Amino acid sequence: QVTLKESGPVLVKPTETLTLTCTVSGFSLSNARMGVSWIRQPPGKALEWLAHIFSNDEKSYRTSLKTSLTISKDTSKSQVVLTMTNMDPVDTATYYCARTRIYSSSYYFDYWGQGTLVTVSS
Amino acid sequence: SYELTQPPSVSVSPGQTASITCSGDNLGDKSACWYQQKPGQSPVLVIYQDSKRPSGIPERFSGSNSGNTATLTISGTQAMDEADYYCQARDSSTVVFGGGTKLTVL
Image (cartoon, rainbow over all chains, first blue to last red; front, side, top):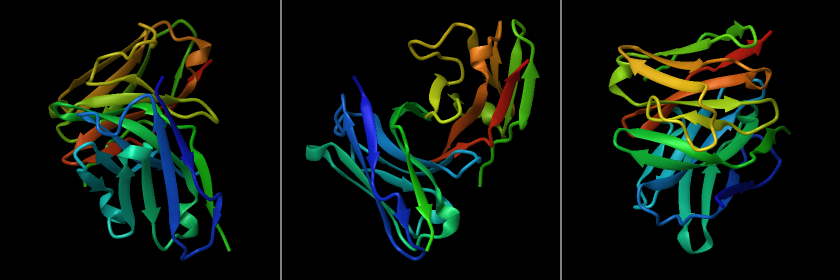
């Protein structure tokens, strides 16, 4: 059974750094053609992809946030970590991690975590 | 940057067919997928690689992708299908989501 679970602070102050952890089970972060992505959703708004990391350690970031995001993984702990610097109130959102499948020209997300709501406020 | 455009809302009567479109430049050359999200829940993959259904997704969900438009079709729409639907595609090494469509079954 594949599961993903996000953990991290529920409240951060403006300019602080957010660190979120995704703990996975039911698959390995070393599985070929798989990875983990972070996706967020501001309240009442659409999904926004943020970053992904694949089994070969290939990483990619949302262009507009590239300078503030870092994704990494610890395969032995089955964890993927996302850090986001210089948080702003507009970054208030539910943050999801999702298993990412790679097939030919496509990426898709077949399992999602429950999401964690992060509020940015002083 | 690449963009995917969806209608904000679509309405359908129970038992009828709902079609939700997703438009993007030469989207047919990419691979589109679709997610269903109900209030307070995480998204669920309903269509991947244009037209494939994951295990457990009802047969009434189908997809197509050609030219500049991908389409999610729900045949015999049920009240339980009322939700937000998002299309998604790969753009180079990044991912793009559409703005979402609220499907109302009335």
